[in-house]
Length: 260
Image (tube, rainbow, N blue to C red; front, side):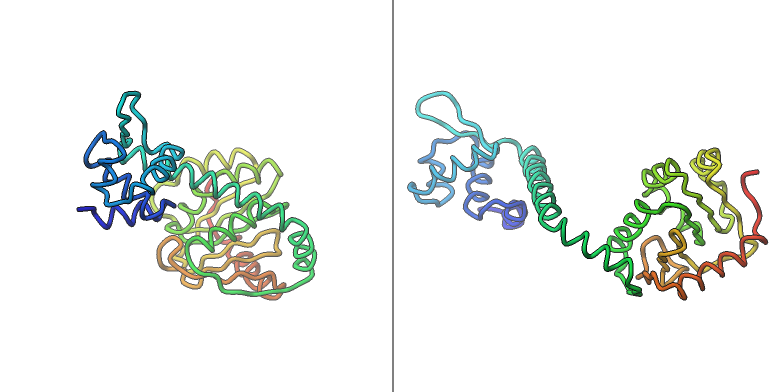
């Protein structure tokens, strides 16, 4: 009897139910002729050759060079890896087509957005990361961040490539956080660029935000929980951005320098 969970797992990667059923049956019984496989998988003989041809094209089965012809299923782990790879390729192709087709629209939207003030709430985790990555990739002059270590460190590690590119653009980065054990070595590396400055607050902070070019703000709505565990306010409203910037500015002179 076929395992329904295995069947569902393969169909989630793009196989039809019949394709998944034939592959799993062949994987279970071993090398088999088309007729025997049709009988065991309970697939009509008219359909079995079409399905086997599809699976062969996908690279999920192989043909033995002998008479009568027999088919062999590749191991399940290789099958999954191959399906994941094929899905990633399709996703990249779809992404490129979407970007190309929407290119002109995005240019118009950007021009409109440059003159449009907005403040929105975005969901935690990936949506926040997407906004942060977008702002980091386009920041031109400055980035200031006030955040507790449990949020700050993972965020910087996850965006290390963005930070390195920002330093190449001569972006000035200032970080305010609280002391929490030894500092990651990467901060020492960043400080050598002459563009990265970090200071430690005298007291614990429950605030977590970043300001990009003093134009865009990402403020987590719960600053005292874990990394990406909170929804965030995203704003380019000058009043809101200035309010957060003045909060940072008021704390900066009183915080302890780290790299001197």
